[in-house]
Each structure stands twice: as structure tokens, then as C-alpha cells.
Image (cartoon, rainbow, N blue to C red; front, side, top):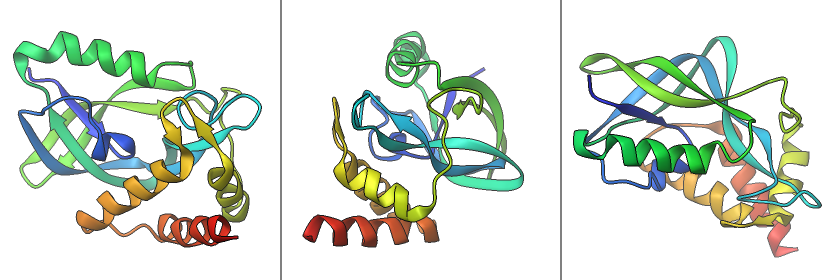
Length: 175
């Protein structure tokens, strides 16, 4: 069986591998949320940023991309994804069922552990303030927000909270 990976945040614009195929996909009972404190990639322990995670919500849904990994690259891609996504134990690897135009696809997804200390729930204004001022090992937190929002727009995926955050973070940056 082919290895598929669900992208909903930075994997949309930086999967880290050349997929054999990619299709728009919907994951039920989760939503995309800035609910993970980033203390490595987009922030620090002293000044955490926020990154997206799949947060379980009954009746929710998240639209993203299912990436099929080339069979000969599965072990390498899986190792690289684990090094990237499991830098702390805030994300949990999960096998999920995605809906695509061609039917269901089982995929690997990285979902948030709501019991982990990096899990958070903040109002949009606080999210914007944190994102605007954070920088981590992979760069500025606003860059993460802008790239993700741009790719969602390109795919025709509406996300009102993301659009609001982009506008607000840009306003904060302009002073």
C-alpha cells in the first residue's frame, strides 16, 4: 500500500520531498488551528511562536493536500518527516482517512496532543501578537503564516481566521 501524507500547514508549501502524486483532500473531525506553541522552528522557549496543528473537533473538517510518497523513497521520507514534525512530542503520528475526488485515501497525519504542554488555545488577537514577534530555527513566524495562507488561497481553500491573522500580523509589523 502506498504511503500518503496529509499536508495542512507548512507541508502545503514545503513538503520536503517530491511527491509521486498530490490531490486535494478533506479530513473530517479535525480543524486546522494555531494551537501549538513553536519553541523550535518558528519561535523559542523564551519567545514562542505559533504553528498550525490538527485539533480534534467533532463535526469539524480540514481541507489540505494528500501527497503520495514515491515507493522507493518511503523510508527516507518517513525518517525526514519524523525528524521535522516530531521534534517534540506535541505532535502525534496518526493514520487518518481522507476524502478526495477519487474516494478515500489512508494517510499519515501529524495531529496535536491536547495534553501536551505546547498545546494552547488563544484568541485571534493574541495569536497575531505572538506570530508577529516570533522567530525560530526555520525563520520568522510571520513567514510561516504568509506562506501557508498564500497556498490555501492558491488552492481555493477559504480560511477566515487565517485571512484575519495575515491582515493583523502585517498591521503589527508596519507598527
